[in-house]
Length: 222
Ligand code: ADP
Image (cartoon, rainbow, N blue to C red):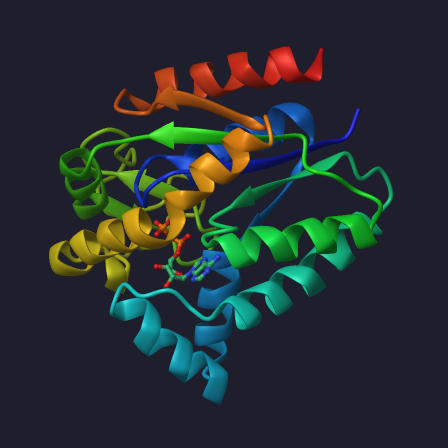
């Protein structure tokens, strides 16, 4: 069975962490639009420079730019042998993006299996993201409060020095949460109406959150 899943939730709800665990278990591939945007920024292109300004302000990149990025990434992944589904992390973030996703999936003869909404409070996500550190090399994410690396400041897998994302500064985090409520929260009702939404409380430690998501997916995959 092909599983095409969306993880929905405010920044810091644990989408990336849970997506990673689920992907490994079900052999799914992940598309993180945040990672695609950061890769463009790292190239130092003109587009990357513009995207960096938007991201650092906690604002959303335009629907057409992100959808184009997603479209080309998805085409690459779907055509690979043994494709068994994709986890969308950080996309869609607006109603127009959700509508575009429908069309993009259809063009690959795919459809959405489920949307998993990880609920989390503003207080919780601000605390979590302020403690988030990322490996620039393998993109593994740590949290000095809940998932610290074995050696302080260094990645467990490749010993690279961890860094704090520019947009994980307290003022920007608060802005990103507000943008989530304004632009992304309407997607909950959108997918609820389509009968695709499953939700759970993400205000729990990472292990419990992963277990909760796996329980939901096990039911879907039956
Ligand atoms: P988080 O989920 O922690 O906010 P992401 O890595 O998903 O982090 O996104 C970081 C930033 O990249 C967002 O704040 C936004 O500026 C931009 N971004 C990522 N995905 C999208 C999207 N689907 N639409 C618009 N902007 C996006």
